[in-house]
Length: 101
Image (cartoon, rainbow, N blue to C red; front, top):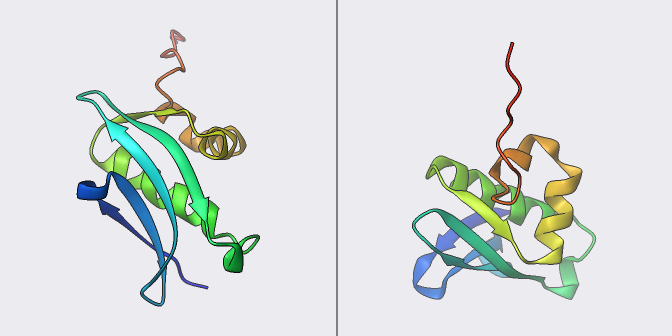
């Protein structure tokens, strides 16, 4: 299944589309520094098929491309980031590394 993730700023959410049909969304609010993810929903007809993960990955890739960080209030987004450490740098709550060579 191919999931297209689009930002719909006028609705303050990223939407997941499959064959042009809306099957999920990740609601957000923005500040000058970050995107606050508040809620994620996926239609029951596609639950367990990777739509939620594809939605979060697509949304975070777009946030990263904009040079912003995220504050994941939504438990689903929090859990997804925890399982994907390559996205942990986007988490606003994570302090910057102080490791030096």
